[in-house]
Length: 364
Ligand code: UD1
Image (cartoon, rainbow, N blue to C red; front, side, top):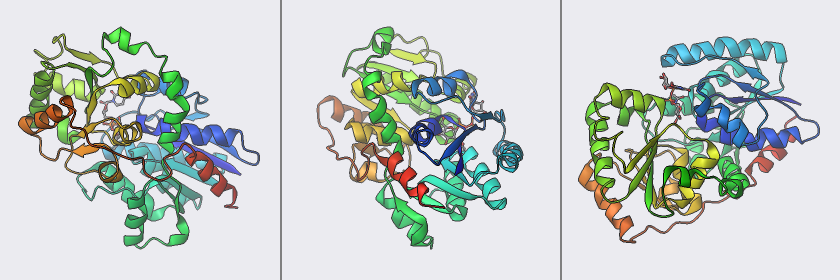
């Protein structure tokens, strides 16, 4: 069985790696790794192949950046050629980025069965491009692999037949479990001059936070206040850095010695920093899940989350309103040891790739 595994943007790599690597070892499955090139900076892409011990892509589409329409369309044009040439039995996509929906549309329209891993997540916020990608992908895919219970419920409410849905767990946690020991050897804390439990780790890249000057300013001000209490490590997404520069927000920020602004980091360095931090402040999707697995406090700066189990079961707290006082209140709780207790959701156990591949073996 020939299966095309699709990656495009940073959060895809840690989801595909365990699946692709297991497929390579599985008799009867011939995986082909296609990288759309949605993320192309070395630090947003190449480093993950090395860190995750994943072979370099068999096919690279080199689409790059663009408006949503341009990027999605370019991926579709290029991916169609690949599917026509490779004639796969299945196409497997992960997550909710533009590459996910673009490749799904191409596959299903060419009559190739398509598998969505991390299916069923919903923020119910259609202003988020990812929500549109999730909805479109799930409605046409043939096999839907779900990471948490809310996914089962959402797909059922959308009228998707039970026979398409499989609760397999969270494949990103497979990567975390596979690599956490190696990550422990990372020298990143020494390089940045931070100590275990004494710093906060930040990531911000959502358009709602970093494209809106008012919100971006609130966030920069908040981080400056946090930096009076502890060190702040902030590996910054290229778009966030560009926006903060254009909005004149870098003064007193990029030159603040308690704020360690770095390029985007590789997987192992980031895992290490996450594990040893006091807490995380983020608007990422995946980090909400990784912190829940690690039992690390996570403050998520978003109005909603498509990963509710991280809030109902895990250590994640949603800060729905961008308000410095409110954010600082939560941070002070953490500093004084008032921590939210959490547990790890079902099937976040390092065996998700195995469940997926076993299921796919039965497909034909
Ligand atoms: C994408 C995903 C988002 C995910 C995020 C993780 C979509 C709709 N969004 O958002 O869900 O959480 O990746 O990082 O697919 N850029 C670079 N170098 C790169 C890639 C991008 O400089 O390697 C800059 C470019 O200016 C580009 C901008 O970032 O225009 C946005 O990139 P894009 O891939 O469109 O979306 P992300 O914001 O990265």
